[in-house]
Image 1 (cartoon, rainbow, N blue to C red):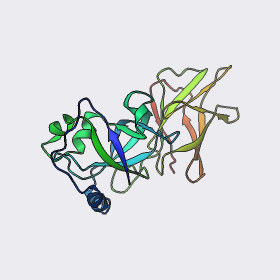
Image 2: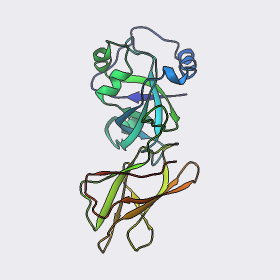
Image 3: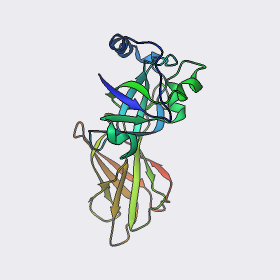
Length: 234
Protein backbone atom coordinates (compact mmCIF):
# COMPACT_ATOMS: atom_id res chain seq x y z
CA UNK A 1 0.00 0.00 0.00
CA UNK A 2 1.11 3.56 -0.59
CA UNK A 3 0.42 6.79 1.23
CA UNK A 4 -1.25 9.68 -0.51
CA UNK A 5 -2.13 13.20 0.49
CA UNK A 6 -5.60 14.66 0.47
CA UNK A 7 -5.40 18.44 0.66
CA UNK A 8 -7.69 21.09 2.09
CA UNK A 9 -6.69 24.38 3.71
CA UNK A 10 -4.93 24.18 7.06
CA UNK A 11 -2.87 21.52 8.75
CA UNK A 12 -3.74 18.32 10.54
CA UNK A 13 -2.59 17.52 14.09
CA UNK A 14 -2.67 13.85 15.02
CA UNK A 15 -3.61 13.29 18.65
CA UNK A 16 -2.34 9.72 18.93
CA UNK A 17 -0.20 7.29 16.93
CA UNK A 18 -2.06 4.61 14.99
CA UNK A 19 -0.86 1.21 13.82
CA UNK A 20 -1.62 2.06 10.20
CA UNK A 21 -0.30 -1.17 8.66
CA UNK A 22 -2.65 -3.31 10.74
CA UNK A 23 -5.59 -1.04 9.99
CA UNK A 24 -4.89 -1.13 6.25
CA UNK A 25 -4.91 -4.93 6.20
CA UNK A 26 -8.19 -4.94 8.09
CA UNK A 27 -9.83 -2.31 5.88
CA UNK A 28 -9.05 -4.04 2.61
CA UNK A 29 -10.58 -7.27 3.96
CA UNK A 30 -13.98 -5.63 4.44
CA UNK A 31 -16.73 -7.23 2.34
CA UNK A 32 -18.10 -5.09 -0.44
CA UNK A 33 -21.36 -4.32 1.38
CA UNK A 34 -19.36 -2.56 4.10
CA UNK A 35 -17.99 -0.06 1.59
CA UNK A 36 -19.81 3.24 1.28
CA UNK A 37 -21.78 4.01 -1.85
CA UNK A 38 -19.95 4.95 -5.02
CA UNK A 39 -19.32 8.68 -5.22
CA UNK A 40 -19.17 10.21 -8.70
CA UNK A 41 -17.06 13.14 -7.58
CA UNK A 42 -14.94 15.91 -8.99
CA UNK A 43 -11.66 14.38 -7.85
CA UNK A 44 -8.43 16.04 -8.91
CA UNK A 45 -5.43 13.75 -8.94
CA UNK A 46 -1.74 14.12 -9.56
CA UNK A 47 0.61 11.15 -9.71
CA UNK A 48 3.54 9.69 -11.58
CA UNK A 49 1.07 7.91 -13.87
CA UNK A 50 -0.08 9.51 -17.09
CA UNK A 51 -3.63 9.64 -18.43
CA UNK A 52 -5.10 8.82 -15.04
CA UNK A 53 -8.46 10.51 -15.65
CA UNK A 54 -11.35 8.08 -15.70
CA UNK A 55 -9.66 5.59 -13.38
CA UNK A 56 -11.13 4.60 -10.03
CA UNK A 57 -9.69 4.25 -6.54
CA UNK A 58 -10.67 3.18 -3.06
CA UNK A 59 -9.57 5.83 -0.57
CA UNK A 60 -9.61 5.57 3.23
CA UNK A 61 -8.30 7.80 6.02
CA UNK A 62 -7.11 6.11 9.20
CA UNK A 63 -5.06 8.45 11.37
CA UNK A 64 -7.52 11.21 12.29
CA UNK A 65 -9.93 10.49 15.18
CA UNK A 66 -12.83 11.59 12.96
CA UNK A 67 -11.98 9.02 10.25
CA UNK A 68 -14.52 6.23 9.86
CA UNK A 69 -11.77 3.89 8.60
CA UNK A 70 -14.16 2.72 5.91
CA UNK A 71 -13.16 3.26 2.27
CA UNK A 72 -15.00 5.24 -0.34
CA UNK A 73 -14.58 4.74 -4.07
CA UNK A 74 -13.97 7.70 -6.34
CA UNK A 75 -13.48 8.42 -10.03
CA UNK A 76 -10.63 10.64 -11.18
CA UNK A 77 -12.13 13.35 -13.36
CA UNK A 78 -9.32 15.85 -13.81
CA UNK A 79 -5.69 16.59 -12.97
CA UNK A 80 -4.11 19.26 -10.81
CA UNK A 81 -0.71 20.06 -12.34
CA UNK A 82 0.53 22.61 -9.81
CA UNK A 83 0.32 23.69 -6.18
CA UNK A 84 0.49 20.85 -3.62
CA UNK A 85 0.49 18.33 -6.48
CA UNK A 86 3.94 19.44 -7.58
CA UNK A 87 5.56 18.25 -4.35
CA UNK A 88 3.66 14.99 -3.83
CA UNK A 89 4.14 11.66 -5.65
CA UNK A 90 0.37 11.10 -5.37
CA UNK A 91 -2.28 13.60 -4.39
CA UNK A 92 -6.08 13.49 -4.18
CA UNK A 93 -8.06 16.72 -3.95
CA UNK A 94 -11.55 15.77 -2.80
CA UNK A 95 -14.66 17.87 -2.39
CA UNK A 96 -16.19 18.63 0.98
CA UNK A 97 -18.80 15.98 0.26
CA UNK A 98 -16.10 13.36 -0.24
CA UNK A 99 -14.29 14.39 2.94
CA UNK A 100 -17.56 13.98 4.81
CA UNK A 101 -18.00 10.48 3.39
CA UNK A 102 -14.67 9.49 4.94
CA UNK A 103 -15.80 10.61 8.40
CA UNK A 104 -17.59 8.98 11.29
CA UNK A 105 -21.29 9.83 11.23
CA UNK A 106 -21.78 13.27 12.76
CA UNK A 107 -18.09 14.23 12.52
CA UNK A 108 -17.87 15.34 8.89
CA UNK A 109 -17.24 18.98 9.83
CA UNK A 110 -14.39 18.00 12.14
CA UNK A 111 -12.71 16.02 9.38
CA UNK A 112 -13.21 18.78 6.81
CA UNK A 113 -11.58 21.22 9.23
CA UNK A 114 -8.57 18.97 9.84
CA UNK A 115 -6.65 20.20 6.80
CA UNK A 116 -4.08 17.83 5.33
CA UNK A 117 -4.99 14.17 5.78
CA UNK A 118 -2.88 11.10 5.27
CA UNK A 119 -4.89 8.52 3.30
CA UNK A 120 -4.35 5.04 1.96
CA UNK A 121 -5.53 4.19 -1.53
CA UNK A 122 -5.59 1.44 -4.11
CA UNK A 123 -6.77 1.30 -7.68
CA UNK A 124 -9.94 -0.70 -8.32
CA UNK A 125 -12.19 -1.42 -11.31
CA UNK A 126 -14.88 1.15 -12.02
CA UNK A 127 -18.28 -0.40 -11.33
CA UNK A 128 -21.39 1.72 -11.60
CA UNK A 129 -24.83 0.40 -10.66
CA UNK A 130 -28.15 1.98 -11.55
CA UNK A 131 -29.95 -0.79 -9.68
CA UNK A 132 -29.09 -4.06 -7.99
CA UNK A 133 -29.38 -5.85 -11.31
CA UNK A 134 -28.05 -3.55 -14.00
CA UNK A 135 -25.01 -1.52 -14.95
CA UNK A 136 -25.30 1.75 -16.84
CA UNK A 137 -24.10 2.09 -20.37
CA UNK A 138 -21.35 4.49 -21.37
CA UNK A 139 -22.42 8.11 -21.68
CA UNK A 140 -20.79 10.91 -23.65
CA UNK A 141 -21.17 14.42 -22.26
CA UNK A 142 -20.57 16.84 -25.12
CA UNK A 143 -18.44 19.87 -24.24
CA UNK A 144 -20.22 23.21 -23.94
CA UNK A 145 -17.90 24.66 -26.59
CA UNK A 146 -18.44 21.93 -29.19
CA UNK A 147 -19.51 22.91 -32.71
CA UNK A 148 -19.51 21.30 -36.20
CA UNK A 149 -15.76 21.97 -36.51
CA UNK A 150 -14.78 21.03 -32.97
CA UNK A 151 -16.15 17.95 -31.23
CA UNK A 152 -15.22 17.23 -27.63
CA UNK A 153 -16.80 15.10 -24.92
CA UNK A 154 -16.22 13.37 -21.60
CA UNK A 155 -16.64 9.59 -21.45
CA UNK A 156 -18.82 8.74 -18.44
CA UNK A 157 -19.78 5.52 -16.61
CA UNK A 158 -17.00 3.49 -18.20
CA UNK A 159 -16.64 0.20 -16.36
CA UNK A 160 -13.41 -1.74 -15.87
CA UNK A 161 -10.15 -0.02 -14.98
CA UNK A 162 -11.23 3.21 -16.60
CA UNK A 163 -8.25 4.15 -18.74
CA UNK A 164 -8.72 4.39 -22.50
CA UNK A 165 -5.95 3.72 -25.00
CA UNK A 166 -7.81 5.53 -27.76
CA UNK A 167 -11.10 7.13 -28.72
CA UNK A 168 -12.17 7.57 -32.35
CA UNK A 169 -15.21 9.27 -33.83
CA UNK A 170 -16.91 8.51 -37.14
CA UNK A 171 -19.14 11.21 -38.67
CA UNK A 172 -21.96 10.33 -41.06
CA UNK A 173 -20.53 9.02 -44.33
CA UNK A 174 -16.94 9.25 -43.09
CA UNK A 175 -14.17 7.16 -41.58
CA UNK A 176 -13.08 6.89 -37.97
CA UNK A 177 -11.00 9.89 -36.87
CA UNK A 178 -8.59 9.60 -33.90
CA UNK A 179 -9.39 11.96 -31.04
CA UNK A 180 -6.88 13.64 -28.76
CA UNK A 181 -7.07 13.29 -24.99
CA UNK A 182 -6.86 16.62 -23.20
CA UNK A 183 -5.51 17.20 -19.68
CA UNK A 184 -8.54 15.51 -18.15
CA UNK A 185 -11.13 12.96 -19.28
CA UNK A 186 -12.06 15.12 -22.27
CA UNK A 187 -11.43 13.80 -25.78
CA UNK A 188 -11.45 16.25 -28.70
CA UNK A 189 -11.02 16.52 -32.46
CA UNK A 190 -10.66 19.61 -34.66
CA UNK A 191 -11.84 19.43 -38.25
CA UNK A 192 -11.25 21.66 -41.26
CA UNK A 193 -14.73 20.80 -42.54
CA UNK A 194 -18.03 20.54 -40.72
CA UNK A 195 -18.72 17.17 -39.09
CA UNK A 196 -22.29 15.91 -39.20
CA UNK A 197 -24.04 13.19 -37.23
CA UNK A 198 -25.08 10.68 -36.35
CA UNK A 199 -21.66 9.85 -34.89
CA UNK A 200 -20.28 6.42 -34.07
CA UNK A 201 -17.63 6.36 -31.34
CA UNK A 202 -15.02 3.60 -31.03
CA UNK A 203 -13.30 3.12 -27.67
CA UNK A 204 -10.28 0.94 -26.90
CA UNK A 205 -9.55 -0.10 -23.31
CA UNK A 206 -6.04 0.65 -22.12
CA UNK A 207 -6.14 -2.27 -19.68
CA UNK A 208 -7.50 -5.15 -21.78
CA UNK A 209 -7.26 -3.82 -25.34
CA UNK A 210 -10.96 -4.57 -25.80
CA UNK A 211 -12.66 -2.49 -28.49
CA UNK A 212 -16.30 -1.43 -28.40
CA UNK A 213 -18.30 0.78 -30.77
CA UNK A 214 -21.14 3.01 -29.65
CA UNK A 215 -23.30 3.13 -32.76
CA UNK A 216 -25.00 6.45 -33.58
CA UNK A 217 -24.48 7.53 -29.98
CA UNK A 218 -24.41 11.25 -30.84
CA UNK A 219 -27.46 12.04 -33.00
CA UNK A 220 -27.84 14.28 -36.04
CA UNK A 221 -29.45 17.04 -34.00
CA UNK A 222 -26.91 16.93 -31.17
CA UNK A 223 -26.48 19.83 -28.76
CA UNK A 224 -23.48 21.15 -26.87
CA UNK A 225 -23.50 20.51 -23.11
CA UNK A 226 -25.79 17.48 -23.51
CA UNK A 227 -25.23 13.86 -22.49
CA UNK A 228 -25.97 10.94 -24.81
CA UNK A 229 -26.14 7.34 -23.63
CA UNK A 230 -24.86 4.43 -25.67
CA UNK A 231 -25.95 0.79 -25.65
CA UNK A 232 -22.49 -0.56 -24.74
CA UNK A 233 -19.96 -0.77 -21.92
CA UNK A 234 -16.80 -2.68 -21.12
